[in-house]
Image (tube, rainbow, N blue to C red):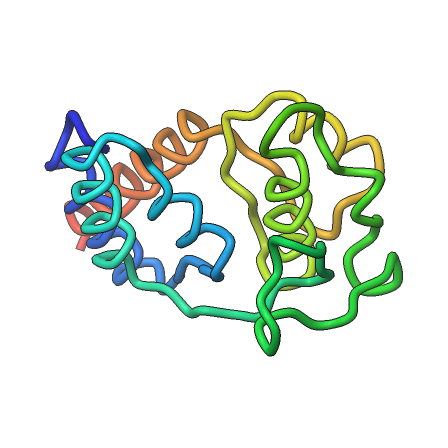
Length: 154
């Protein structure tokens, strides 16, 4: 979306037309705020802040990442999986797990291009659908095409 500002407007319009919102939380915001390149960080935060979203508490917590009062207890019964089941390897694995658990407990769809995270979520019975960003864009285009067809038939 950094390279294509029209895409952001398309997403915002689709969100309004299709009545969906994005789920945000402090983990996502913290990751964006930690972007080392200042110009990129400013652009990413502007995009994030312009999306129609509802900020929610994370499902589950990790010491050193989670913030007091911004996390709530989560277990398999309300997300379909545990933090340890979806924690990916590497530096951001615990962050990924918190984002995944929160999506599974709060959202209908998680949009991610992290194939390792997507695979773990599918394998462990996430309570939400997992899609790539490209699949999300295809969905928006299909919905737009359907809307145009309906408008033309009226």
